Every structure is written in structure tokens, then in C-alpha cells.
Image 1: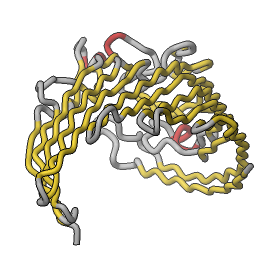
Image 2: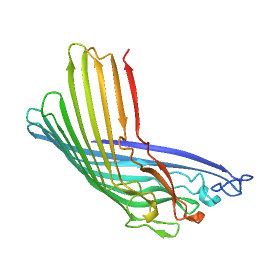
Image 3: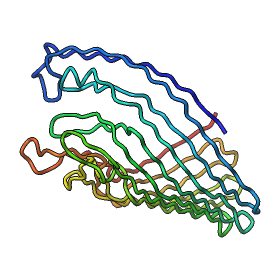
Image 4: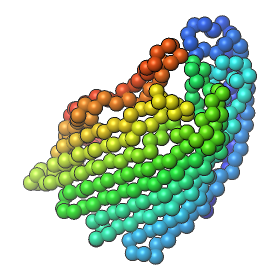
Length: 295
């Protein structure tokens, strides 16, 4: 069992007079000043059961708190001086951690349910930025498997499923209730393999391959088609030689080996009369050499 008491005070000052019209997004011709204090007690309780050999089962309930905030780029004086309510989260988690076959197989799994009260959402509708509170739920499962089939070889896999949606969220005249949370892909998984082999008495060679798969997600609470970012697949590789005393390592590595083009952020240009988006892309195929020396 545990608990935490938090008290935070924030002050906000916005100076907009004389700056209006320089570029889109600046506050209007007003000055604003506000302050607000918030306090909260968050608790946690967890029960662990180790009645099975090499297996831990646990159940926990925990509470989280994020203090309120102010919209630093609000378009009105009232908006700049109106505080955002604190965000509260209650998480229930049921999990298992286990090892099998003389510790050659590790299996970890967890089910979770997070209930958000006054989730803080920063988003844009057209050229205006809104900061609002929403009610939301995030639930899902995570699975991790690590295997050591033969000496020097490690195989691992992880998978996560996420069902995250707004229960109640009305903002900017748009009802987003029932929509998927932003930046919350439903599916994501990784596959990895690594192999280590000795090189006489000089050291060892380490090889590693990774496959990363992330599902599609939305950038806006409205879940408009234009705000959707497609899922992507990445392949990474690394080979390294490490000295016997582990004081230095020379590694050759490559990331995004297939040179996949994928977006990590996207903004639509609808308000500018274009049915297209402005995207920030992830790194293209990247490779290099890294030398590490431990003093």
C-alpha cells in the first residue's frame, strides 16, 4: 500500500498587445494573467501471489494525478485566464511474470484498464488551438516472451493491444465521444533475435535483428480520415565486437533498412483550402559505426 499527496501552484502570463497579426496562431490584442492551485491524494494497493514455482501473479489498483494547466496560445483573454481542470487516472492491472524450462523461457502478460477523469487534451480545430478536458477509458493487454533455445541465442517477442476511446468529449462544437484517442494505435508488436559467439580469447561478436510493427493512429480527436497516420514496419540490424574485458566495443548498425517512408506527425491543411497534410517523416534508412569505450 502507498499514497502520495501533491499540491501545485501555477501562474500564467500572456502578453499579446502589439503582437497581433504577425503570424497565424498568435493571441489577440490582450494581456492576461492568472494563477491557480491544485491538491490531490493518490493511493495505490497491490497484491502479489507467489504460490506457484517461478511464477508471480499480481493485482493492483493505482491512482494518478496531473495538475491543471493554462492555454498559453488561447485566442481570447477569457480562454487564457481559464484554467484546465486536473487530470485524474485510476488504473487496475492484473499480470503474471513467469519462467519455465530452467529459466530458458520467460512469459510476462498483463491486462489493464485505465479510467481517465478530466483527461487533458490539447488539439486544434482549424487554426484555433483548444485545451479541454475529456472523459476517457484505455484498456488493453500486453504480452512479452523471451526464449533462450541454445547457448548464445535469444529470441524475443512483444505485443500490445490498446482500446482507448473518449467516453465524453465535446470541444469546439464537435462531439468526439466514442472516438479513438489520439496517438493510440490499437496494435503494435516487435520481434527480435540476438546471437553472441566468442572470438577466441579476444572477445565476442554480437548480432541483433529487430522487426517493429505499429498500427495506424489518429492525430485528431475527431478521427477524421485526413488525420489518420498509416501504420508502418521497420527492420533494424546491428553487429558488434566487444573486447574480452568489456572495456570497448565497435558496432556497425543500420535502422529502417528497407527505407520505408512513414509519418510520425501530421497536420491537415484544410483551413488553407487544401485537402492534404503536412507531415513530419520518420528517419529514412540510416546506418553508421559506433565505438564505445568504458573508462
